[in-house]
Length: 83
Image 1 (tube, rainbow, N blue to C red):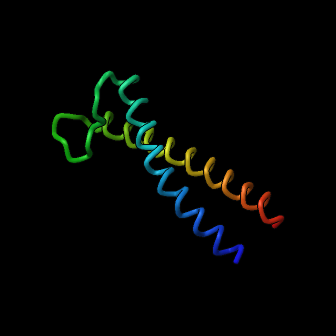
Image 2: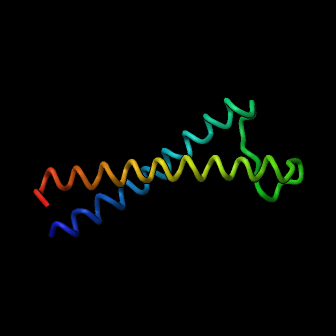
């Protein structure tokens, strides 16, 4: 039962984390690059450097948000269930 609760909560926090990391990335990109939208890999108007930089920043933000939410979820479940 505890495993099922963890998986359910983990799935929800995963979805929330994806959304949250997208919002954070858009704000960071807007601040750093001064543009509303990040470059798409298939867009001709951006060079390799800008596309790869955007992907690296987006990946780093996603990784940090995911790790933070996974850790918080695990601790919350542990506090609630004792395991």
